[in-house]
Amino acid sequence: MELSRKTQRQAGFVLLVVLIGLSMLSLLLGASMQTMVTHTKLAEISFKRDREAMLFDGILELAGMQAALSLRQVSTPLADQAFSFEGQSESVTYHVQDVAGLVDLNTAPFELIEKLLADQRNPDQLIVTLADLRQRRTRLSSVDDLQSLPGIDLRRLFEVDTFFTVFSGRRGIDPASAPVALLERLTGQKGSRAKLTDALPSAWIQPPTRRIFKVRATKDGRSFGPESTILITSGATFNIRVLETRR
Image (cartoon, rainbow, N blue to C red):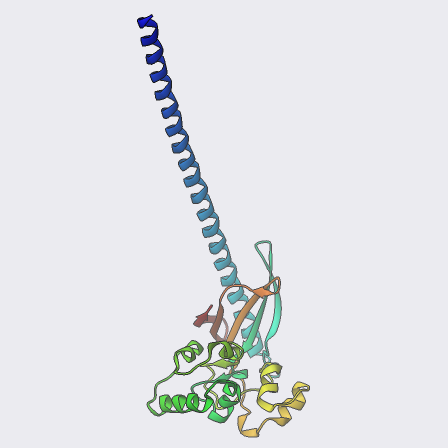
């Protein structure tokens, strides 16, 4: 009887050890599977990012070609023109625009800039700050630098920051390259591009750069990739230099 009980206890102990071993094995397998899933997901994300980066590089290349062609067509400035692009089984629309159609924060008249910052809490103070920067010959290197100015309202800034640039070097805008929405804000009127151009003060009207362009892409109606500003040098061949990338 005692031998039988001892045998039962030994068998129970062995069973307990087996169950504990199976539980540990299950946990190890589960952790291993989770690690494999995590690595797979990370690989998929990395592949997607690499694919999108390659696709956007292709967009910049095509945008540069389109801009280079426009340099040979003096009567046709690029005014936020849209072009379809098929690449890697993905349909993307890219938009190319001469930056002369935007307001340069470093060179435009302050009364022009003030038109776009009028909704800020203290637009006068912002203009004083910008004037002080110019007086000290401190150049804004990006439109994003506006976000660091004292008293800026970011929510209201985001409504107009697409109308600014720091690369045109113009003391006004080229109305043929400008977004109609920008012309409407500057004139306080609605209407056709021709009507809005007539309403602009002549001192604000400047020629296009025909070599510096803003490029943005959309996919399924949404932004795709970063917004870039590119410099095109064109001759027998053309070269592209990315001046700025904004996300």
